[in-house]
Image 1 (cartoon, rainbow, N blue to C red):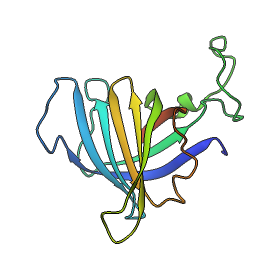
Image 2: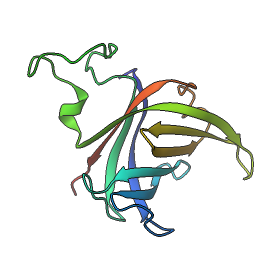
Image 3: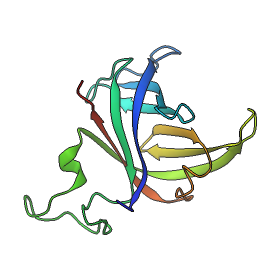
Image 4: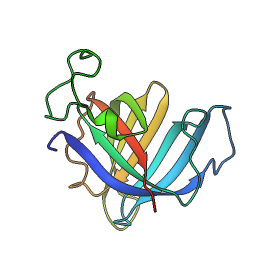
Length: 147
């Protein structure tokens, strides 16, 4: 879907590597299968517990509508299929910072999104994150992959 800014399988490497700071929130560190994209994501662990070494499909999208149209209001119950029907964990947030990381051998773009205080830091190749724009509202969707 063209509305997807990001659609990858991620592998959780660490959960609360620096210790658990909040009772209901865990910070996960993950990598995409491309080996070049790294992710730090705060998760409501009471609602959606995550363990190291598990695989998840992570989608970041401008909309939940299957046709790619913008979300304008809540449709009547059961009348419209949405991406939310296919995922287990969904949060809505705002891109608040996009910066360049030149500390390594390859230039990376770092995208920061806040989901009501739960943070996402996505670091990747500039071409992979070129759709992200400052002050853009986005949905993050997760689904555990079965083996």
